[in-house]
Length: 230
Image 1 (cartoon, one colour):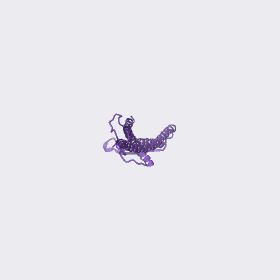
Image 2 (image 1 turned 30 degrees about the vertical axis):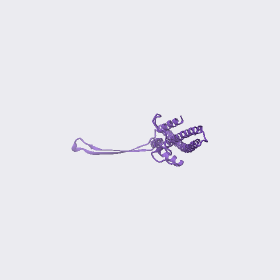
Image 3 (image 1 turned 90 degrees about the vertical axis):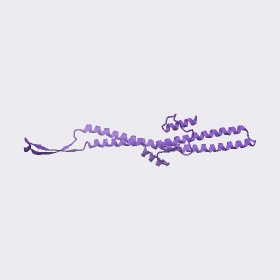
Image 4 (image 1 turned 135 degrees about the vertical axis):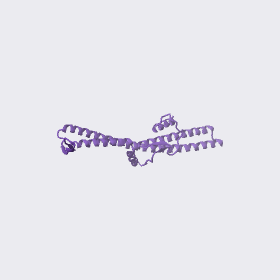
């Protein structure tokens, strides 16, 4: 049951349906490959994630848009200078037409729009502040997610190493039980017991490798990188 749960968790982490066929065992080492190398150092990993995460880039784009709108409202209070030019001909007949041209220079001062302008400026200031806070909060959550994922990968590696050590020990115990039984100094129950322990150790290794794969997928997801099984 534990192995089945580990497979389901891994498939969900990979974005696959829980019923997707998956290998019964995973190879030792790193069973998950990423679209690009991932830094192992925590600080470098956080910086990597803050640069790669699409959701953070989207928040940054929204913040820049809010800043541009805020700046445009501030520009409304500045005087506006307009130049209008007109060029043409005027006369009763074609051969009597005179060339005409006018140039107008117009200076506009927004003196009577104070209340509406202040309302728009307050609205845009609030929108900009909210966008900045959302971006900062998301960056903080991404950092925490990356750091947790790195800890999970390290813990999963330790579990895999421990399970593999137990598996080696279980193989030795089976061999010893068989030798003792062959020499007439051990019982068949000891052989069976050692084989049961071996089967449990093999299941523990499988579980540990699936747990490591899941942790690696979640780490890559936290850092904004795609993953596949090797």
